[in-house]
Length: 339
Image 1 (cartoon, rainbow, N blue to C red):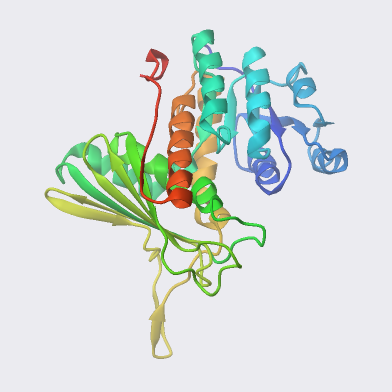
Image 2 (cartoon, one colour):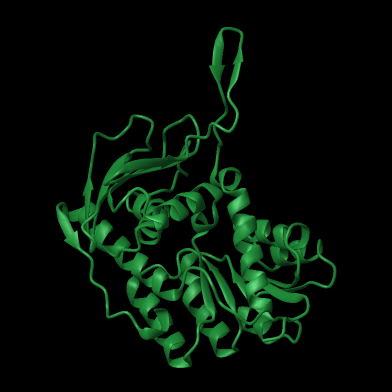
């Protein structure tokens, strides 16, 4: 298919993530411009639109998607609003980059999957940005060479400085460990079949009633075992690390030692303080890849199936957290559309 001209993108949701994507499209990404922004807060939408030449503010996603200057949609609104926006975009035949979660639960994700499947072609890419991180890409490439042999175990650590005051225990699964769920499936090319959540003694730094940290174990259909330490009130920085243990060797990423200093009798470096800083390059690469593919009439990257599968794993994880024990993941048969 011939490449389109400059892509007119409607950004749905102008909070922290949406506003950052507006900036990214205008200042970093080539081949696209923000032609519309949408937010239920009309004043916030107008304020964001005012900073972009030729951008129109809307409060209704459907109205923005019907505009003549909108060629594609980026969804960065809260998760509960995703399903309606996705179904509208598919109805209009518009390519979509949807921030995670695809939808907040497996049932609604399955409705989006069925709608896209009936269309007969992919339109939606899910924003699992770690797949675009340079370190994760190197690890994926190494595993694909087979040099290390089959992966047996994958160890993950995911730490945040502090959680927001309104965080609940299940949000550690749905909003944080969700990333490890996707990278596990992607790195190992295996589905997660069961989840067990263990509850260590809560940190004194965690808000009352928040189970933090948690230790999460995945089993996969390829026989691998995966663990995730999730600790969202560690106090010192934002860390994402992964180590894969294979038959003939191991590989680790996320040590954050791009630069180590030695001075005044000490050695050390710096630790990122949030995900925007740590994964800035990944977000840039993800968005440019989406724009390039969309202009070429293609859809690449994480699919609706990936979003649905992760939603199902999240549900199993929350059940294990609340009820205890091992919980199996229930998935429908994978449609041919998704390979």
